Image (cartoon, rainbow, N blue to C red):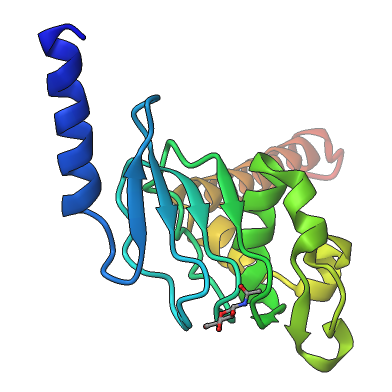
Amino acid sequence: MPAWGALLLLWAAAEATTDCPAACTCQALETMGLWVDCGSRGLTALPALPVHTRHLLLANNSLRSVPPGAFDHLPQLQTLDISQNPWHCDCSLTYLRLWLEDHTPDALLHVRCASPRLATRRPLGQLTGYELGNCGWRRRESWDYPSVWWDVALAVLAVLGLALLAGLLCTATDPLG
Ligand SMILES: *[C@@H]1O[C@H](CO)[C@@H](O)[C@H](O)[C@H]1NC(C)=O
């Protein structure tokens, strides 16, 4: 093995051990990412994950939800096993559902909800966006956005301009005026 290859492996091994969450075991993959095994650890919350995580095993824990954006800092993450957890399938799980839909749609069939009552034992992939709800994100986001208020201001200006124009036309063509 060339020296740089050995160095790379050494670096990968060091990386794997320094960032690994205490509850998990990590293994450097030949393809540079990390295989992170946090399965069957009784976890109730997602641990802080290394940025190079490629395959993440979270099966058989006590996870009920995942904070929105939880995997956004893991650009290499490809597979996620989150089966056998008591998922609480409400609007806060919309992020996880969309993430799975984008990356590993098959996994959605193996993720079953434990609560609330209407979702019990149903696969997360079977719940519609309406059933999950969206916690009001979309609406808040779009109205907080400055360009929306800009559009509203422009529309108001346009209406005022039209009214002014109509007024001018009326007085100009009024035969009694
Ligand atoms: C699930 O995790 C518990 C510990 O939290 C362990 O005792 C049990 O054997 C695990 N089950 C499976 C199927 O891995």
